[in-house]
Image (cartoon, rainbow, N blue to C red; front, side, top):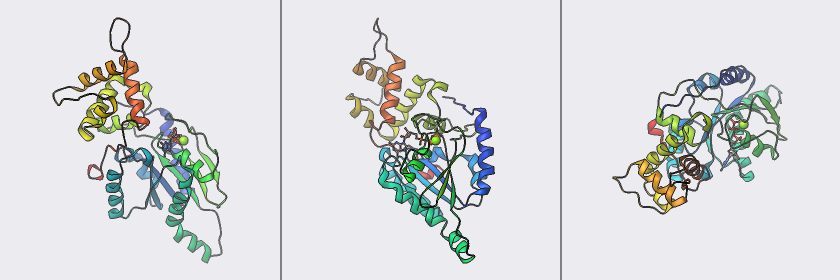
Length: 283
Ligand SMILES: Nc1nc2c(ncn2[C@@H]2O[C@H](COP(=O)(O)OP(=O)(O)OP(=O)(O)O)[C@@H](O)[C@H]2O)c(=O)[nH]1
Ligand SMILES: [Mg+2]
């Protein structure tokens, strides 16, 4: 399935981030732990530049830990600082602030030598809906910025000052103008980085079934209590799920709209199990 979604405001947001990064000490680069590879935005290279950067693998409560271990090994090998978190759990705040403290330790030591004690400033970047604003709220211990379970919730930049002195810049989620890889684009849709309104949800649900069958052969059959034979197509399986769930319209026709939404919702709420689509070797 072909997906292209790059609204005009994202170009503006990227420009704002490129400007703002000049005024910060470090970058928090948020990746959705269900598809870290798909969340690497080529446009962010110019945002990060030479600033100290920590990768924040968020939504770990929904992700596959064995695959995440491979991501952690990859970051360790490449010497990139990283932290695994579930930002909706307030107890994780110290993990994130410790990670920022670690990547800015040299700078703070240099400043202290010069007698400068100014707040450390970090910009939080990532694709839409990966949990940037939730991370900021987790650190601030209150609802300092707006969050929501759809992409494009944060519209502009917003500074949040924490009691610790750390200053965080929330930014709008951004993508890149052209997806070279349809599988990556579909994964960005699965995790809610691309809005449902710009894709064909039936095609997306079929693609989700196809990718899950390949990566987690049992998850569909276990969730819906159905048999998935290798000879069956994704359409066949979709139809069996629809019948099992009662997504049938008057006249006996399958309600593809409702069934597609239900399957995608099940994935997004973690009801299909803990899933991570990609591995670092695919980087
Ligand atoms: N299960 C789970 N949900 C999370 C986690 N972090 C964030 N969310 C949810 O993900 C959705 C998106 O979170 P936001 O913080 O608004 O994401 P964002 O990256 O700021 O999104 P934009 O501003 O639209 O780019 C919200 O419904 C959050 O509650 C997490 O660790 N686990
Ligand atoms: Mg946001």
